[in-house]
Length: 60
Image (cartoon, rainbow, N blue to C red):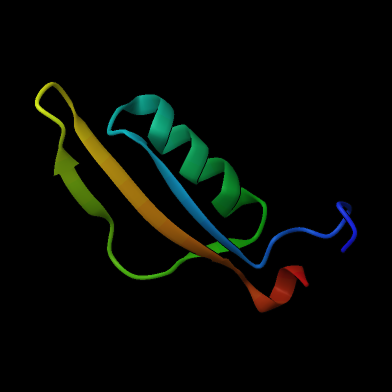
């Protein structure tokens, strides 16, 4: 598998903050599309978010 090809599926996780939103936004700018709703959990200190993204057909 070549490292030059973009992944068709990405699962982004992290603390639910502005940096997480920037990471998801950057992937949207690259042609990814949201896949389903985000998932949230609490680890006792912070809210942790997960968002699945798939590469849109226009980007392939």
